[in-house]
Length: 623
Image 1 (cartoon, rainbow, N blue to C red):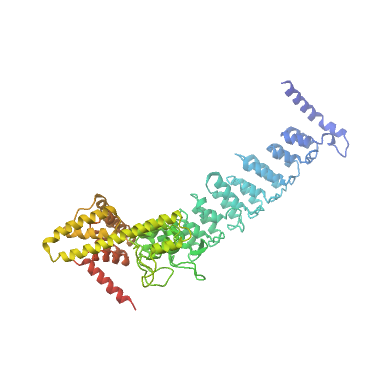
Image 2 (image 1 turned 180 degrees about the vertical axis):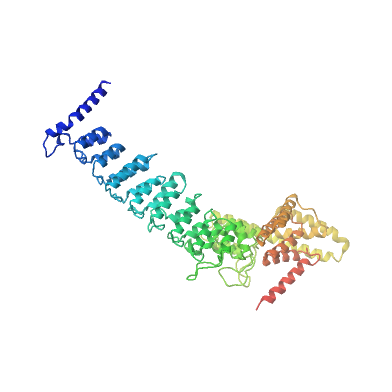
């Protein structure tokens, strides 16, 4: 208490006798006796001392003798707003510096850190009214506006600086412009967009396309999935209305606003870009090759593909000045190998067959299965050749020769029904898949991937040989038995039992499935398994809900699965033929027609008639 009283008495005494003391000094330096009192008072926020010295006529710019900093710097840096305002009103030099920070930059920095910037705004207004330069630049290129944009919720602060003609396009030495600055800092804070700050900056002439952004341009920020916010579409609309380039190339991968928007979960971004002139006939880069920008729509949903097609997008377009951009999405872009995208592409009439070659070559077993389930035709001509449709074993040989993961791809192709015994070459005298695999790994026979792949092939080839021979001999016996009706039933039962034993040893054998169906059909039919019956019910329900060709492909895939689980229900093959004809997958339809017809499942000639009709139409279509 005593020390506080003494300080108050000392201050009163000082203020009381200060004018007299000053008058007693050298008239050329009337404040020399108290030369550092301004700095001390400013540092402590001593408003009364500052007011008294100003009334006495002392110079408010008298620097601290040790740091050589002006009193205004001390007051701002220590957040004494009233003291700083007194100094400014007392004609303190407002363009003073602390290192490479101006007094205005310090004040703006304190204002953007404050929860309530009202008093700071009053000080900054006074500084600007007293001639403070609005764009003093630090050594790193920061201006007061850039500092303010680090906290874009302080819209009054940003508005004040812009009203005094702060440069809305001045960037830091590293390329951070005010608009990018505001977007990045607000997103880091709460994953939102500072809409008001963006509006202020754009209205003051901020470029929506800064030439060399530090992080990402405002348009890139709006369309990038990694910076997606609920306000992304509103932000993009504001930028495009301010004449942002909808076709700007962002990086060396040739990403454009449209390519990124098509991969963004927000469905409104891509149509907005097209409305403002984004070209759907442009390309991006994927693993060094160009691909049409519309292929990026495969990243999200089938609806995105349909929407872009409705806007006029051509999914068969390819770059005209090079040959590395394939005109078939599934042949060039693995992101399209998912069920929703494939269903949409089928609706657009895109041939899925060429995708099998790419998926086999790259060893993408999940994509390969998705293509198969969607109805891809394995007999379609290769994307990379002008040859006629290739024979059944080609994909397996291709996997053995080029696939990055042959052991993963082989099971998919074998389950699909690709023949492991098929020989290569036009004369069918070339190597089979096993020979090709052995040659490929000739210098590394201990490779675990090779050993696993080889074991799969050897097993498949053995089973194929067994079941093929069994099927041939059984069919011959049944043909001869037709001449001996009394023995026919007994033979069928014996054959049926033998077939069941072989089926138990190899449930994936396609030949045995067909043969069992043949036997069962001749014996009046057997009930399906519970698993297959459940699948058939699902398929029938899906068929009732189908509205497009694309809707029917999953139905056909379900029927195929049911046929694997219940090999003696021949009706499934008839359903598959019918469904694949409806979807336009004629090669797949004819494949099942041939399977059913050759196995003797065509009692009433329905499959045979389909087969003949298709063959006739195909012959008529040839020139």
